[in-house]
Length: 156
Image (cartoon, rainbow, N blue to C red; front, side, top):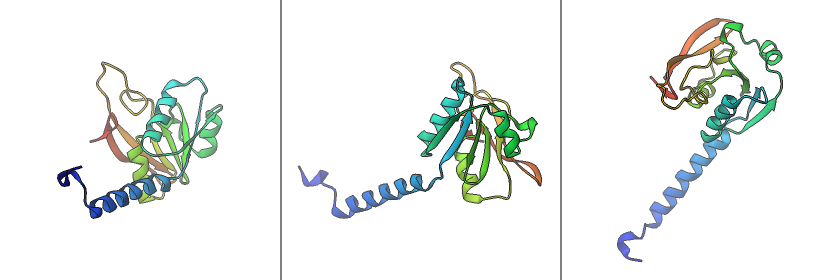
């Protein structure tokens, strides 16, 4: 191997350290427990999105409405699946980046919701259709507010 292409020891050590930091960040994410209807394909696609973003996800195939009621999801914010992560509720097709921000900022709230099922949100991608712009809603006893806006899985 030529000297030109041989990385220095310092570069190798820094590269390994950076990879370790990246792995540690993924391991630091709490597990997501997602409750969904067993036949829902878009829910499976959302779970894949979370896993691709470094979350460990446990899927519970069970009736979802009793879970929504128990966790305090307002009817107007309901979607097709309900998850729990880090003491918060995540309702619907919430992008992983919004969940990571929620976990980092730790606001006083019940959780996040993407009401209905916007086209282009994670798990709701449709070939040939433009993704919708939608809001991620922070909700809890103190009320509701817009936590983030997305177009597809990208913040806007």
